[in-house]
Length: 566
Image (cartoon, rainbow, N blue to C red; front, side):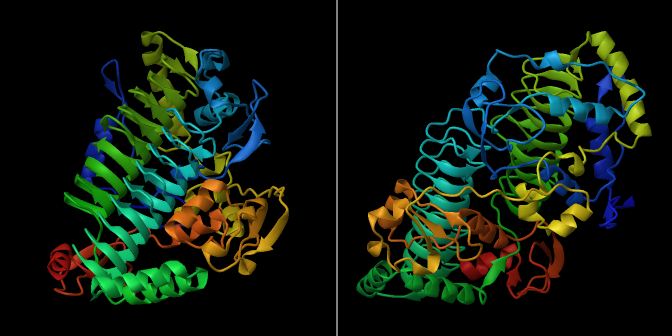
């Protein structure tokens, strides 16, 4: 079945396959023996992803007071949002009950409007966290971190700063999708690396600078597609003595030498073949950065999927579709059109932030360890609730079909929350990371836009980035009392002591760009969540890849790439 995206600015044609129809039958709720069918989606996969992402703010943090205790806290919600926000410790406590906000269903009104009104009234947790963090209050969507700063969607780290999707790492800085690494900086999609600076798509590499798609390499500079090599510079084999002389020169050099080397490497890597997609141990997988998965189609940044499609930044999913972010410990099954769900949930659809073994949850927000919920917000250990009001199982089963009939009449049933109803500015969400829009375009599509409110740093002086001393050894300790003015945006930013110690230990120059600008530049290096059909540049076999046909890279199928590199 071919459909046209219902968004007026898109109107892209997309397919709903028989596999999709069969899946919708499996996730359709069954109440008292009656199956309540889920219709095919109205939006194309990209617009569905944007809609979910528009509800997720990871990296825009604000100081504000807890609406209940008055204590100052760090929150992903601005002080002027029209709903209460609680400090996480208080939110998770038993000192309040979201059922106090419960209301009756009004069948004369849109159910989705009633749910969104409820969701705005129920207190929100300040930041998305469920596990312990120590000295890591400036993190979000993050748990089990110690001594970490500005980490997002990151767990189980120590002494790490400025990163997204950083997991089980120590002393890493400015990374994206970095796993089990130590003393690494400016890395993207790297795993099991040590003291790697500027790595992309590398595994088990150490003591190296600017590597792309390398594995098992040590003491290399500016290399591409190397396997188990040592003492190489721009893919040329050197003696140990010659290599060490070049490395000493690089370590003595400053920002200008670092940038010259980076730019030379960026030009160098274009001439080498790229894999059609990144991933290992897969069967019937399309997308990018997918590993240990089977029958996972058009998925991105995912691990351990089975029979899934259109999932992004997830792990441990089985028979799920259109899921963005999380997964967590335990398998999650039969979930559809959700954001931020995980930890063993089953049969959850059209919902956000549902964790803790929850099941049979529909149209709900920030509910945990709960079952049989419809249109609820902020509940913990609850069951058989509608709009946060308690019902018996029989009453619940009687009301839900009536609600769904009303939702069908309003074209609401089977669709996630409208992006235009998100309380967060589009430019504050991860939708802007993957699908960037100008303010004009965002507003034209009905999204919110929130201008940044800069805090004036209380420092001795503000120094333009171009006036910083070139080398890290020339930076005085009192840089901790300065603010640096970003080269690109002129926004001032600070250097903290742990960060300065890391730069000195890694022989890295101080950054010249604001952390938000560094994040934007990292995201710009990622391929889009979109597939194109093209042919392998080696054997001319048809492939699907995230490299658009008009890009300059030579893209190989998996077989040709492995023959070339190994």
